[in-house]
Amino acid sequence: MGIQMILCLETNKRANTDYIYIKEVLEYLYQQNNQIKISIVYMNTKSKYQCKNVLREIERKTRDYVHGETKVIYCIDTDNYEKNAKHAAEFSEIQQFCERNGYDLIWFCHDVEEVFLGKKIPDSSKVQEAGAFRRKNRIAKLSLNELSRNTMGACHSNILNVLDKYLIRK
Image (cartoon, rainbow, N blue to C red):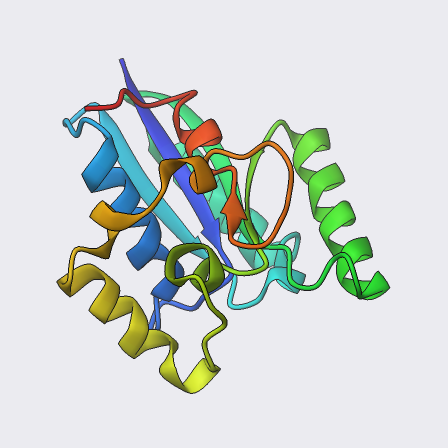
């Protein structure tokens, strides 16, 4: 019996920056086999987390996977949740949406680049920086403690907490 993990990402298919970091985590830390299928839903922006196209894509990928169970995981940047009421409200809405639907939520505080690179990156450099992260095997230098947090804080994520529920570490 297999498992499909549908990762709903803020990025778009062309840039695919978020998945570069997540894929590095998956390949570096977790056992890979043909019983695990990773599917991606590109939202283009987190504000589209419950738009019809995203929900249809999740439904289609769930329906088409017949080899086991499907887990839906939203991967969301917290942005400036502690200083910006709009960011905090949006993140809270996404959390509640995931809870109502039985979805998991991976958060990156304040964004995926800050978690994996330790700093903010201008939009114009995100693709280049993600590629360099992969090429230079920077995943090997990351503190796993920063990736397995239960509370939000700068450069923190809960990614390992969520993935550990479904995958086996090497």
